[in-house]
Image (cartoon, one colour):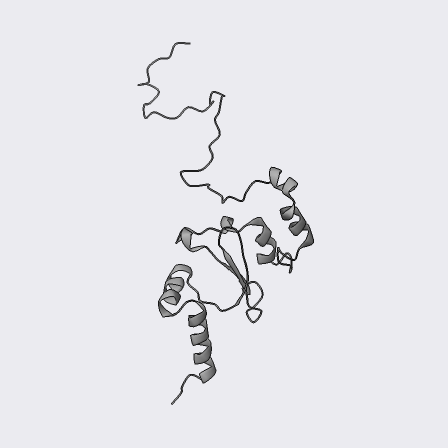
Length: 154
């Protein structure tokens, strides 16, 4: 008879406990399709939590747990620029350890011209549509044929 080794059970219970217990772990599994264990590396201003576990393969060892207030509407554009480089393996420094980022975000003069991070709203009702002052050169087909169209004065 084959039984699962004790270390597999221990890892399973460790992952479930780190994800908040059985019910929260099931909710997270339903929400993100995966359960992982890792070291909390930091939290950004939006409430996103960033984790790392070097035992996972490269490309899967860093991940973001999106803020609970977005529920199922999470999107990759919700990752702030400070954490983007670390999350995509462009740097191994955390935003708090990067001297340039630390000086940029701690300087009150720089904050005057920096806009706060906002997610990409394309494809939603809040998307940006520019106002055009130029008459369009393309006419939308109204369903009539050339013979049945009313004559337009020239």
